[in-house]
Structures are given as C-alpha cells and as structure tokens.
Amino acid sequence: RRDTRRSNKVILVPILAVLFVMIGYQYICPAGSNSCHLRTRDKFTPRFNFSERDLLRRVDFDIRGDDVIVFLHIQKTGGTTFGRHLVRNIRLEKPCDCRAGQKRCTCHRPGKEESWLFSRFSTGWSCGLHADWTELTSCVPAVMGRKEAKKNGRNFYYITLLRDPVSRYLSEWKHVQRGATWKTSLHMCDGRAPTQDELPACYSGDDWSGVTLREFMDCPSNLANNRQVRMLADLSLVGCYNLSFMSESERSHILLSSAKTNLRNMAFFGLTEFQRKTQYLFERTFRLRFISAFTQINSTRAAGVDVDEDVRRRIDALNFLDVQLYEYAKDLFLQRFQFARQQERQRERLRRRQERRRLREQRAFLYQRRQEGGEAEEEDATATTEDYTSQVVRW
Image (cartoon, rainbow, N blue to C red; front, side):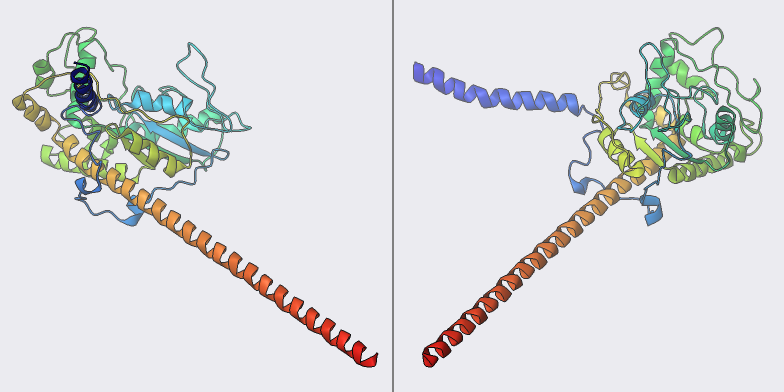
C-alpha cells in the first residue's frame, strides 16, 4: 500500500504542475489577447516598408534645457497608467513631486522651476480635456510660454499610446455606460469649437448611463468611432468637424493619411497590448529608465465583454479607419522593436570584439615584456661569465 501511495504521489505531482501552468497561461494570455504574441521571432512578418529614419528613434532629450515631452492621451488606451509611470516611475535626478491626495505632480527640471512634462498628471488638462493632436500642437507652445514667460526655442516631443480598436471601443462603451462623459472637451480646431449641428450629442441629459452596446453603435456622431485616427490627424485638413467640407471618402482618406504621418513622426508611441516592449522603446528613445517594470494586464472590462461575430464585424466597420491605423502602427512598433534589439545586439557584439582585441593586445604586450626580460637575463649571465673567465686567466 505504501508503494501504491508513493506511486500515486509521483504521478499526481506532474499532473498538478501541468494544470498550474495551463491555468497560469490562460490568465496571462487569455483567448484573443495580443499580449503573448511574438514569443518567437517567426510570428511577425513586416507588411509595410519603413526607412531607417522611421525605425531609428533616439531623442537627445535635454531635461536640463528646454525640451518638453507632450503626452497625447487618447481615451481608453491605458493612458492613465502610462501617465502615472511618467510622473512616478522614471528614475530622475530630480523626481516629480507627487503628494498624497493630489492628482497632479510637480515635474521640474533640476535646478529650475520649469516643467519638462506636459500631461494630465503634471500640467493638468491645460489645452482641454483629452486634447487631440490638432488642439495640442496649436495650444501647447502658447500655454508653456505663458506659464514660464519665455522661449521660442523649446523642443516638443509628442508621445501617445494606441490600443486594439475593438477592445478600445468596448472599453469606452463600458466607461460611458457607467456614467462617464467627456462633454467638457473643447474640440478646438482652426480657432473655434464645433457647432451643435456639426457635432450633435448622442444623448439628452447629464450622461449616457445604462446605454446598451447597440444604442452606442447606432449614434452616427459618436466620437468613439475612429477616435484614434481623429485624435491623431490634423483636422484642419478636412474642415474640422464640418462634414460637408468634402466627400466622406476623401475625408476618410485624408484623415487616415494624416494620422499615419503624425504617428510616424512622433518621438514615441506605444501599444497597450505590448507593455514591456513599450517600456523598452521609451527607455531607448529618451535615454530614461523606469524604476519598476511595466505590467501586462489582460483582465480588463473590455476583455470581459462577450460579443458575437456579427457585433464584432459591426464594431470593425464603425472603426474601419482605426483598424487600418492600428495595423500600420503595430507593424511600425514591432519593426522599431526588432530594429532596436538588432542594434543592441550589434553593439554588444562590437563590444565583445573590442574586449577580445584588448585582451589579445594585453597578452601580446605581457608576452613581449617577458621575452625582453629573458633576453636581458641571458645577456647579464653571458657578461658575468665572460668577466669571470677573464679574471681566471689573469689569475
């Protein structure tokens, strides 16, 4: 019986270990998640051709000088978490001053009363709630000029995060369903806010609490549709929110092209689905280091929403520009990651070659010294012998 119990335990241990690994994998990498992609090199095949200039992102960020990082925070992309990383998790000579009970931190340069970061958690919504690219690029220089009463010579480095469009859309719906609104957003473009006819409200009353997903999708003026493209494009190119300014197809083409260009030219962008890679690329772009590692969290509200294929296809259709932008952004992001890793490996190989060359030269030098020392000893010995022999002859 003892042998039987012992054999049962031997069998049970590996079975439990396998079950533990499977449960852990399902938690870390749930079905439909992108977070566990690219564990092997052969899973990513680039689709777009980018120049080395597009792939190489290294910014000479001078925190002591006049450089400013501007965070464009798109709703429901994980921007709140990333924004907290910026003010609480970067290893700095002068860390941001974050006090308990206050949402905003003071992020000053070393030795100066000037901010190096323009974001929700540092300067607040100084250009409006969730200001987009059109608003920020026209507003930030003026706001920073008023705050610090100087300089035209600042460098503004824009950064942002993107997220899978379906997940982001569902997350925004759940957020709005709970009563959240962004109705105080300004949506400024070409010096004015949109009229009510240009941007009709999707609901009456204070908020859209309890809205069903179908109701959320049925509102044609819902800014959740293609939000990422709209917030990254230059809206001045399409007449801002005036939909009669050009045809819908022309407007869509220009918006998508503008969003791609602006995203590609930003100093940095990350993807919610790739937290560790986002951290890696940010650190190498700005030569700043985070104190603790980013965490990939897949148990989001969007992940908990079970939608059928018909609904998913409709969400895709409503966000067809965001879908194209995300495919482009993901390809560029992963190519940048591969390029950065390749450069890192090349630098490491070069360092090892230089180290081996240095060691060889050092060994050669020591060998030569030993050889020279041996010859000198032989000469001394010969001279001593000759001197002794001459003395014997003399004697």
